Image (cartoon, rainbow, N blue to C red; front, side):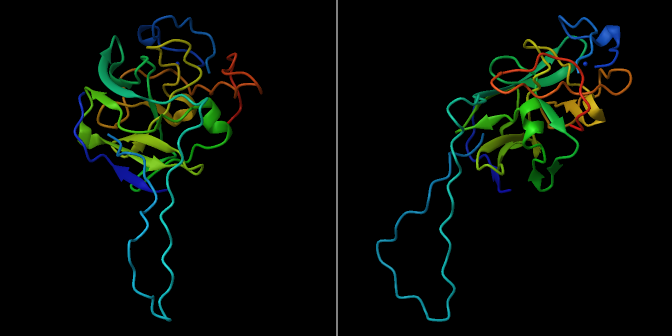
Length: 219
């Protein structure tokens, strides 16, 4: 996947949870910037005939805009939450996560298909506003479907459908691979659940969210 670095400066849960670490509203039930969009190269105004032995150059492929029904991350907000400490949320206050099976060097997402239904990637169609997150920590990658996903410290970031309201972090420690991300792209390990929580199941067809409950999915 292609990786894009920002070039402009812009303003800045679960088997059993530890009671002291339960996010607001959590009852202990099983829970489970970017650079502008790339455009195609302009048509050359004049070009010499290519040499017979020269291989034809490929036109760069433009990143796809996210589908109209997909939530866009317009803002990244670094903040402190009670008990959890430093986190990053989107513009609506949903806590963002990183996935240990991804890569930061090179930046790459390995959460696709049903994984991405449970962990929706933070997609962008331009330059998100930043608050409490350093511009040099934010970038983008091009996903397999051509959409662009935000990265923090090189790590792709996601929401979790098991979080039922902004400020919750029921995704913390899920599968032993998902963790709240801090403003530097590092894992926030301040508040970990006991055991290894399982993720919620993917949403049913035609549903915008999961009804909760653990699953046997590996993501």
